[in-house]
Image 1 (cartoon, rainbow, N blue to C red):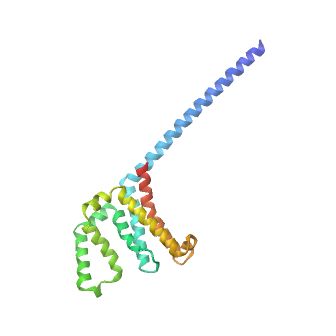
Image 2 (tube, rainbow, N blue to C red):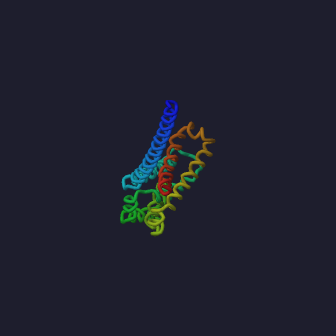
Image 3 (cartoon, one colour):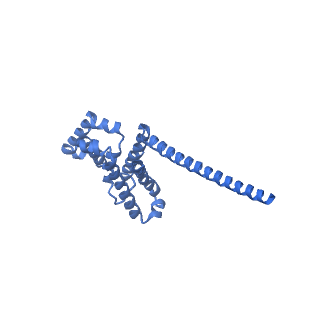
Length: 208
């Protein structure tokens, strides 16, 4: 009798423990699902908010302008740095893009064209790419200035440009290690890596 009661007690206890473990496991799975959903929503909210987008676009644009400055000073490689112009075009924060697309940009473009046509000797070489950027912003049709700039196509173009510049810089430096150890190498490499931040993060948001 006592043995039978003991076996019954052990069976009930085991059954109770199994049920408790199953309930705990179910609660943990629900908690993990809720935490994962909360994290995704938080990431989306932080990134798609006005401040988040402006920060990402600003980092990308500043990095591209930084590389343009290096190209005119001490970054003497054979990579196609003129690709930084369309990158800046697609990554400029909207309020800056709108400012230069207005009358201010038109006046700057007009003065640059007049100087380049009638006073070429007074038009410094280092101004050619910035002037080309302003001209591109002013004359770009709405398809590029509004539609492409504000969807995944523009982001993919930025990502392609950043990847191309990175691999060309590594090749020109003689390898990945040399790109960090050569004079000015680490600053150039970090600048190009920063170009990847905006398009990669934005594409992740599109996927999520």
